[in-house]
Length: 196
Image (cartoon, rainbow, N blue to C red; front, side, top):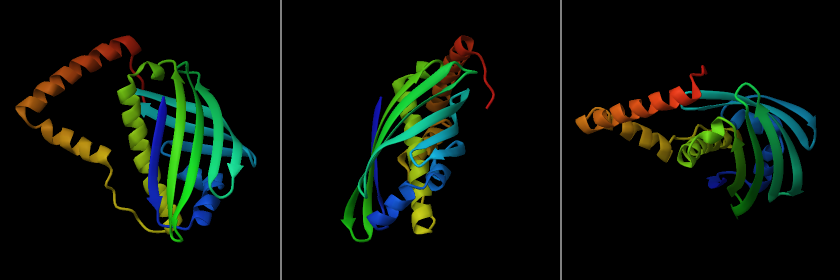
């Protein structure tokens, strides 16, 4: 699965690049990040918690920075697994920094992810929705770290969640929830329950 995202950060490209190379800063911005061990300037061991529906996983991911072109491009590759769920993942990530003007930078990333095991059995739409939410959270935290200012939350995914909540109050929404409950019951019968 390929995911491409971009955002505009109110900071010079050189400042964004410096943050990008700081694993502690970047790690603090990634949703679900529990720890990051710096093995070398180009190798990291990351522990991350991911939850999708009623399934939770904690991945240990070894990531390598494979290519850099200061201050505009960084590529990394990694793989890891959660033995308790017999799930594994591989990823290749590319980051492109483009100067819009001296005080603004476009941050664009292209991520290819291969997810196997129980988490990999979820549909692509569910995986993409989770990725969208993680990106919105990451972008907000990164902008706050770089600019030192709190960012307004205007993510489309949160608006969609609010709309779904409103819809649940209507007869049509309640019927939809009944169908969803039936689907969740069937999924639990297949995967079993998992605590977060």
